[in-house]
Length: 414
Image (cartoon, rainbow, N blue to C red; front, side, top):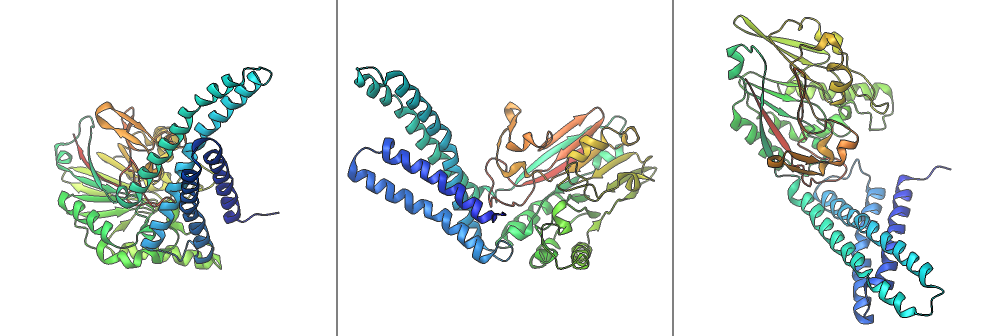
């Protein structure tokens, strides 16, 4: 028997609600009149989650776009995530309650049980505090965090680098996911920040859309305003192939990909499909190499062919690779001896899971993405090779960002 994802989600949400509601009624709220108001408020707030699920079911995720979707789904997700953060504290309280009952059930001094139970107040208050803080944080991520673009400046070092390349400036953007945006305002802000850098090149490292090529049509005008001294180079991400959409035929799927590629050509972008381009700087050469999607997981597969793309670029003085998934660097670029001269790989894909903590001054960063991708955000080095994982500009799934802002990366060389 196959269950609808909406049914499964509804069942999970219902059981989490029932568990928290039980604790509200039995342990957290004491006064009867106050209890009724709290429970009523909880039910009203929780109803937002069920309204969001019903809206997704009836309107459809693919056709429903705009602020109404982002606000409703974002608020619903903030509510549910807050509840999930409450559950461990309530579960610990249940464990302590159980052990207290087992310890004192044959003891005539029942008041000691009550005294013991009163110490559980800490867990209940902690659950409420953590839940409330989490809700506020994720709600902020929807309204503000997703749009507060951060520009990061990175220096890449290379031994015996020709002087001409020390004047080079490259901007990287990644994971636009334009199908998630309610309007063009965020992209306009991004374009303005890119143009302020007056870069030689802009690298776009994949995932222009969520599902279909036509998502980019409303944003062609604003994306066409990206100014660069030489060229915008782009590659495809896993979402760009249209594999997340149910097509009527393979031919329709192929036509969608052709449309996406043509849209990028219309913007004046040079899309690299397992190929490279050599730029001459007098006696020295820069190789910009771009491959199609290459991932180590079975879910996405390996479409790209680095061996094909690299042929003819082996002897360039500076070799830069665009590859969407950072695991490509881990599994092939840094492992295969024939690619040892690739100086830097530019990737995206992870979004930093759009949630995490980064404190540059303490050299500290954490995100759930690190349990899936060892290299998930920022600059990494393996011997003489560098990998930079851009945290992305857009969002997908959760329509927000908390602690992992949208990123523009600006590179120089020394």
